[in-house]
Length: 312
Image (cartoon, rainbow, N blue to C red):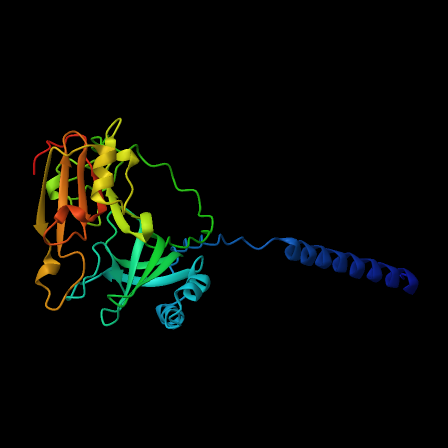
C-alpha cells in the first residue's frame, strides 16, 4: 500500500525549511559584521623643539637710512621708541676716539651703540631692543644710538603634543648639592659680583652706567655709594671747583695722560685727565682741563668705593 502525502503539505514543509536556513545564515552574517576591528594604539607625537630666536625690529640698513637724514632732532623723532634688530660687536677704536663700552655693527662707518643696561656677561651678538636716545658728536663725526637693553632674544617656545605616561622609573641616586651661585652676575675688573668696587685702580671705563649730566656732559657712574657718601650731591659735568665746594678737599689728587694723547692730529679735550681720591668714598675723574691747569676740567666719572684707601 502506498502512503500518499498531499502536495500542499509538502510545499508548506519545504517553505519552513528554507525560511529557517535563511534566518540562520542572516544571523551569522550580522554577528560577524557587528564584531569590532581590533584597535591600533597610535604612537605619541614627538615634542616639537623650541623655535630658534628670531630678532624683530628695524634692520641695520633701515637704521642707517634714518641716520642719513643728518638732522639730529628729526632723527630722534623717527628713532626713539622704535625696535631695532642688530648684530653688535665691541667697537674698535682705530684712532677715532671711540668711547669705551660702545658697540658697532659695521667697523667701516662711525655709527656706535651704547647699552643703557645689558644682560650679565653680554659681549655682543644678536639683539632686539628699543632705541632710547640719539646724539651726533660734531667734532668726531660720530653717531651714537642709545639702546634700552642689550641681551640675546628669548627663544620662541611651541606647545608640545601630550606624550604617553612613562613607566615609573627607579628613584635616582642622591647627587651632591651644587655650589650656590652669586646673584650679582659676572664680576668685572676691580669689582665684585654685586657691583661693588673693591679696587679703584683696576676699574675699567664702561663697567658702570652711562649718564648725561649738566650742559649735556656725558659721563659714567661706577659702583655703589658708601653710606652718607659725599658724592651724592655731585653731577656729571660739574667743574672741579664746584665739586670741591660740595665734597670738600680730596685725600690725594694727580693727573695722567690718556691714550688719545698719542693719536696724531687729535686735538680733543680728553688727552689728559685729573683724578681726586677721597678716603672711604671713592674717586672722581675730570677731563678737559688745560695743560697748565689740569684741575680746571669737568667731572666725567664717579667711582664709588667704600673701601677706598685715599691714595693713588
